[in-house]
Each structure stands twice: as structure tokens, then as C-alpha cells.
Image (cartoon, rainbow, N blue to C red; front, side, top):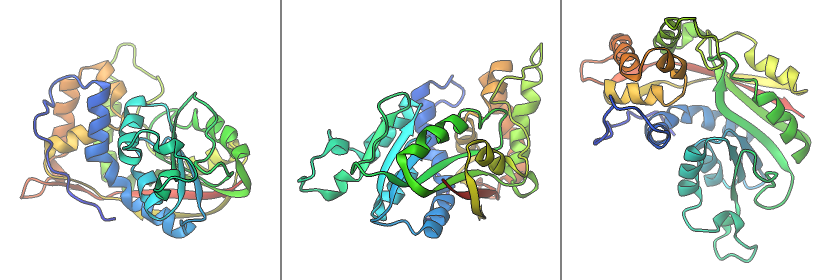
Length: 294
């Protein structure tokens, strides 16, 4: 899959407060596909295919799972965002009972997917076998505390995998290689306008060199290789860019400190250096992945 410019979604008022459903749709329709090159690069390296039994932690609205399933993998996804999970179900499980399809189902592909809400039953694989790959495609290293819940999640997931299974962690690349970092600085500046200044988890911070390695060490994983992938963010116009970026959650602290309209206005202004003559927005970025073994 290649990066694409996302067309403006008609009928949405970007100045209105975004409810959970709207934000989830903005993520699924605008922002999620920006990470498609990362999914493809990881899957190429891990040689994803019919023998792969993958557990996706923080699976979001399911695009990474869909790509893996298209390669023949058995996939199970877990997420705490029920709105995103509902969209993943619509993508992967459009017919009721897909994830519970019997072994004699006339549609073998329907036995390759399962979705579980975080806090639900143990995420046993779609085929009942232990996993040989665990992925975390929600990039870390760009917001304070964004890895705190990941370490216990990994510790809980590892016993569900075979010994020596691969675990892939992903994160933002160096700020100097990510044009979007300059726009994300708006989030930190606006969050600091709160009185007293807000320091809660979720506030934007610069990516650190060893963010992924630190998570691996705390989760008891052994690093076994890494890579960098170009993931440019391309949007059809500034409005789509603003909606896509706000759907990431990286601006939530700024919205709480000021208001959504103020954040949208300042993000739009910060995007001007990346706007092309035809009105499209293009920001080169680099993301990292770290391959570990259990």
C-alpha cells in the first residue's frame, strides 16, 4: 500500500465538538492509512502469511489487521476504544459471527479474524492456537505516559504466544525527521496555557532515542532488530489535515486547556508551511519499529 491524499469528508463541521464516534471515524477515514507503509514494511520483514497467528494490541479501527489477513494471517485484535473497535468489526467482521465462525464454515477467511474489547475475555486466537507474532502499531514516543499501559499489556500477552515469538513495537522517529513534530508542538504550547500548567499523561513531548528499547526492557523482551520507514502524511486540504491530526488524541490536553476551536485554528496555521499550491498538505515523516523476541 502507498500513501494517498485523503479527500475532504463532506458534511462534517470541523468547528463542532467531536464526539467519540466522529473522532473514531476521522481516524479510520483520514489518519490511519498514513501508517500503511509502516504496516507493510513490518509484514515484509516478518514474512507474514498463512502460518502467522498475530495478536494486535491497540488494533484501532483494524486497517493493520485487514492488511495482515489479506496476506493469509490469522489475526486477533484488542483495543480499549469501543468506537474504533466497532469500525474494525465493520471492516473485518461484516457478517454477524465472523469471529466465531465454525471450523466447517464455507468461508475460510472468516475463521482468521477475532476482535476483543480491552478488559474482555482472554484474547485467544481465531484458530485457538498460540500466537507467534504480537504487534503494537499505535506509535509511542510522542506523548507523556503513552507507554505506561503498554508494558502491562505486553506482559499479559506474552504468555499467550509461543516461546520465542516475535513482538514488534512501533514509534515516532527523530523529531528532526518528522515534519509533523513542528505541528504537534502546538499541542504542548497550548496545554501550557492552562493554570496551573497541565502535566497529565497525553501531553505532547519530543520523541526520545530509546523510547522503544525502554518499553522492551520493562516488558522483559529482547531486542532483535529494528528499522525505519517513511510515512508521509498527505491530506487533500487543511481541514482534512486538522481533523486527522486531532483524531490521534495528541491534542487532547491542549483542547482541555483551551477549547477545540482554538486548537483547530492554531493547528491550521501551523500547517501552512506544508501546504502545496494545489491546496494539499504534505508532511514527510519517519517512523521506527523494534523487533523483539519473547
